Image 1 (cartoon, rainbow, N blue to C red):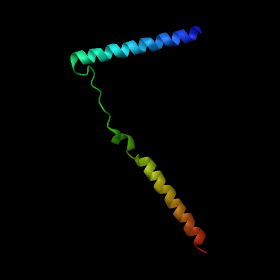
Image 2 (cartoon, one colour):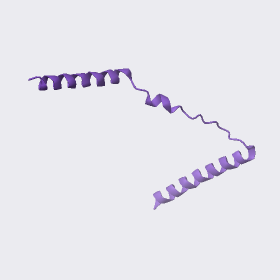
Image 3 (tube, rainbow, N blue to C red):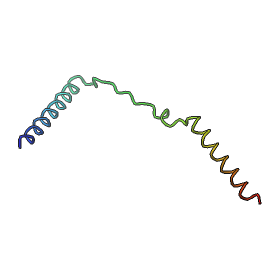
Length: 71
């Protein structure tokens, strides 16, 4: 039961903090912090080494197929 009181107190403190931030933002009329949105295109750039590894694997597969179908 003591832990339940601690959880309630922590939740109340967080809610109070959020409410004071909301009030401060309303009073100033503009956000106090500017959050930059990261450019996600850099996350999906292919790595040259991975591409060369894939090409190498495909080439080995093709050579094995030629060898299997040769006779």
